[in-house]
Length: 79
Image 1 (cartoon, rainbow, N blue to C red):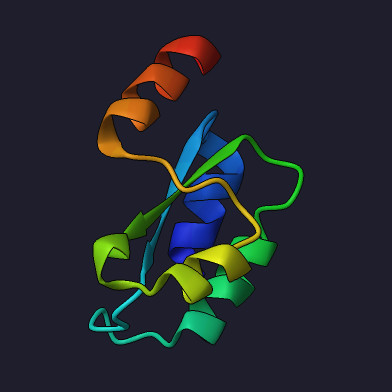
Image 2 (cartoon, rainbow, N blue to C red):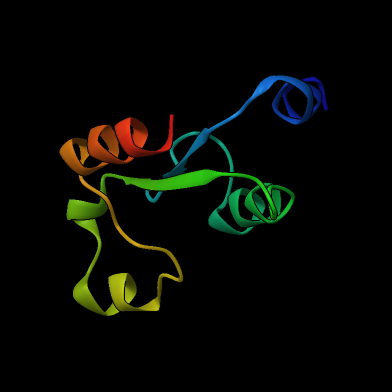
């Protein structure tokens, strides 16, 4: 809840990181639920460890899959 409040009140641009291995302690479903709460905000989505994902799983992703370099470019464009 506290993180959500900070995001709501302070963040102009959010880099949302999915942990595709779920080793962060949250299932992908829980991570998606939090991501859904960010609708309407300026969000760049990054899939951590996406190199471990199958091409089939990558194709299911609703968001662009950015590399670190592409994220840097996006930040420069948006800020």
